[in-house]
Image 1 (tube, one colour):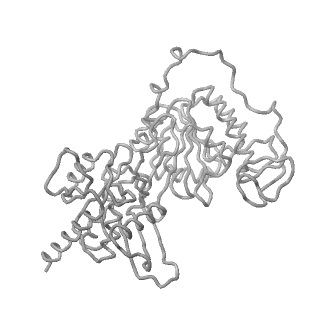
Image 2: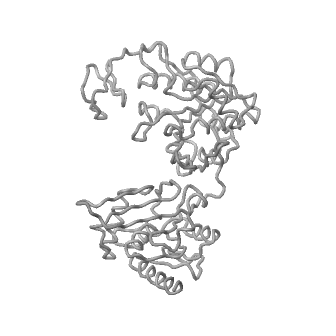
Length: 449
């Protein structure tokens, strides 16, 4: 059997190019595991729906509110959580803090480390203050020995760091290969599902940002989390890409410190730069992340290009959506970006997926192009291709949150009878928004003079 090391595609003969993922020279020869060696779930008689106990009542609260928020309220018994992120981003730090918090509730935790030796893990534990006696650490890599530990220790939670570091002895392949990851994960899943013990796996990511190993791994687990952020900055964001027990739009905010990760309570301090007001190209938008409203600073820089093809650089904003907004401004506002380099940045390393940020980006681009300084301004609304500003969900909630944070001047879609103030300007299209923008910029210049 020949298996692609990139995506797990199987072939009876060697191929130079994988027909599934398109990568070259990734096929290696592997002996197929016999069916007798595969893990099997114990047989159980069929049950009717009313006879099955609800797993919602069996969640483990970690005590770390941001972590629980992303999971939907805690770790469900018998579930498998896969957390991935770039090297050095803080995955092991986060999970050691989670393990220590749960161990402090009197529950037994088994932390299996296949990548660090005892002295390295001890140094991190001392720095984080993880000293609970209920937190048991094992330095094993062979799956058979790990399964034996689970039977003897009988923990309430198992953490494996990482799935690419463990292996099965009967498979003639190196740890981290597609077949090792697939079979090792299957063995672990089979046991934790039968014992109703939750399992957290750490996964590596490729240079493209996706989880390394077969795609089957993401289909098998119940929850897929991504831990991301700039390694040179303090902000860390925990996102849910898949969650069978909760909402996938929630995010958790953390700040990396010398004592480990701390939950962020005043998130606007991370995503706003109040000293940047009264300069062209700086606007604040209100985005919805799950049930939470965040005020985020959006910056735009438009400069003369000396290249045949002007640059378009977007950091934290969807590149194709940026191109769409540029086209809308060209058509609806006669703004000329054809010979200009355009740079867009979202403060704090946050990635904006909410379409309500369209209006803020359009205003930032236009104000920098026309050199219009702006006062503290919050703008939110989705742009249509005709330049119309479409309504967005939770409109009044965004307005109230911006007012609580001290912002009074706002550009919004029509509120339709909802609570209004004198400083909330309702606009129906981008032309009306830019006309108001010029008016307030002129007033600011007069007042400054």
